[in-house]
Length: 201
Image (cartoon, rainbow, N blue to C red):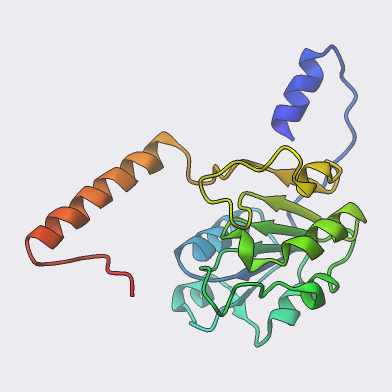
């Protein structure tokens, strides 16, 4: 809201409707690797009431900071106020957040995807956002890695009250880009030294 409020003031306006705080909310995190763990750590600073996670690979660090694993994805959608998707896109996770899961959300639920667009059924999500079935924040879009969202893409027509969309900028800060360059160089040098590192299987 800060950029919107800034433009609001610059336009000569002042009155602003109240929002909501994160304190007391229940956070559901799908994927508890490095990113999911960091989301959990940050959420604790906002004093959320509960952090639940879903991941076939259990992370002891997630449990150590107070996270609780649940056995089914549906439990995340039923018992979370805010759901953050942080898992990898694999054959198993593609389309994992389908119509059945999305129907479990409430109008005040918030779904955030900072992983990959194809994890969510895009057509169903778009229609349900148009209908106000829940709210969402999207940084990624199916099939658009490195490409722009088309001017006539249906998501551009979703009311702003239901959707905050940004152009895949979660990683786009100077420090993160520099770290990526340094890590790439380190990986190349390690490979040339016949001691590969950061291998992805």
